[in-house]
Image 1: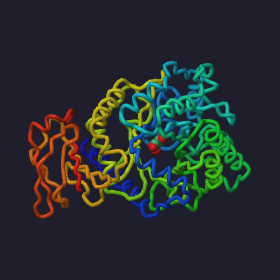
Image 2 (image 1 turned 90 degrees about the horizontal axis):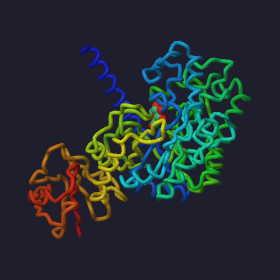
Image 3 (image 1 turned 45 degrees about the horizontal axis):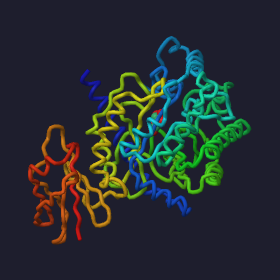
Image 4 (image 1 turned 30 degrees about the horizontal axis):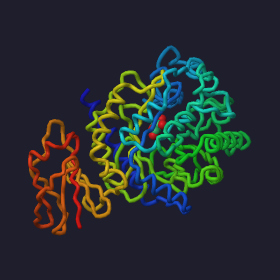
Length: 478
Ligand code: GLC
């Protein structure tokens, strides 16, 4: 048992280190956009800092991982359960039949947008189609969509459209998650060859006509989303194995397993998408190059400040998809994650998964509310800031920066009172600099010695701060 635990910990650790390297490696290869409208949108996106990701599909009815149980790979996250576990064909059929019972009658995206906005979120990314190929929008390219589920008769049946509208109405930037791989269409997993893994079931170069059909299908679906769903800001493309063979980075282990070229012609797709949506951010995840306008480390935070545009996507609980008994991270932890990400110059895209009835767990609303309470006092240390590459994390302190103001954020543990003296290394202030704690108007006394600034915090001032998850010192140097 102990051995097993050590082994899994080692594995987990190596994965974290590995993806960390990956995130940081991307940094030197990042290709900045040249289109001024894209540059402008990217700058705007970098000021908003905090977004909501949602994974929602028919899989929510079984309370299982999104899509992956269809994938015949020997990986933990692909495991099948239930009566068809030992029969892949039977399983796929039963899974796809979930379309016939999908009926989220509690669906009310205004409620989500209101809760997300109150938490301080300012952008949204929603799964229009995950790898399983089920479309949460009214596509004309396949019948495998919400329009042909029992919910199809509901006035809000075009789920993606409704979600986009509700969030747009509350001033969110809008992103469409779209999976390039599609495990439903016979032009990707061509039934002539049973699929062996996540990749196309046939080599595209050998069957170019088939692949052409798949490319057209993908192009048309993306065009529907970019043309018919109002103003869009981000096209967030997942499934990085669908890419030109020449772009594979062999230093990344999962990319080594990609067997063949799966080029869907991103230049053409991006050009089309931007004729409908000028300035659109295209995020062709992990495909470093001109169509990855920002990089997206997943479930982890890079170890250092990164100067390029980046976003950590991360789950509020443990999974991307809805599971009935979710283990939500405490609000304190979520706030600490947010400030850590922002201090390293990134954005946080926090995932919540709706239930089959079409709502979040009550705990998710609780967390959003608690984050909102903290943001109400402290959001000026988040929005429009950049990370601070010189100060870096110093124990429980992290730093953000805006003009002449530095925000020093102290991540307090549960039950911990703010120390009466805070030392900040490598910070030299002018004589007239002022410091106060957000949430209190008291000006704090400070002194400087050998490049270290020490702030004195009277207990009564610390007590004025309405919540104690993380304390923000606003340091303004004139
Ligand atoms: C992981 C999951 C995938 C999910 C993605 C979100 O790659 O495997 O299903 O959509 O994370 O970032």
